[in-house]
Image (cartoon, rainbow, N blue to C red):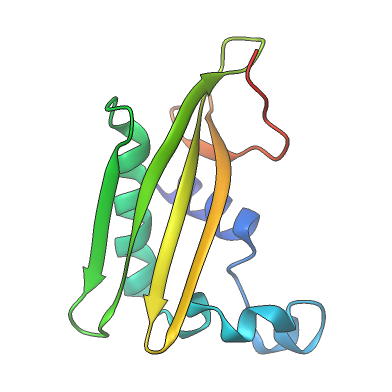
Amino acid sequence: MKAFLTAVVAGIGLACTATALAANYGFLKDAPISSFTEEDVAIMMKAADDALNDATPRARREWSNPATGNSGHMEVLRSFQLADGTACRTLQFYNKAKAKENRATHSLCKAADGTWMIHHGAKPK
């Protein structure tokens, strides 16, 4: 789970510090993730992991943190394999924090150790 969380957070560009916001990631200041607590991220990533590991074709998971009021959902849009047989899924994230809302779609592929990693440019065989 920790490897998955690190990969997704890094891959989506969610790790936005004040320095990063001041540099190239200023566009994230209006994204919900900029208001998320560590607990929000953990709850969101658990939901994403559950959706990715559910064999149901359009698996969907909701998440919410009553302590912050932040919430969202994710849905598998498609499942496919790379030419080498690696299982991949396209996951759409929708997150809301206060008045901020965002939707993002990423392809993730399952590594040999079972973690899901963002794979930019993943194409079905």
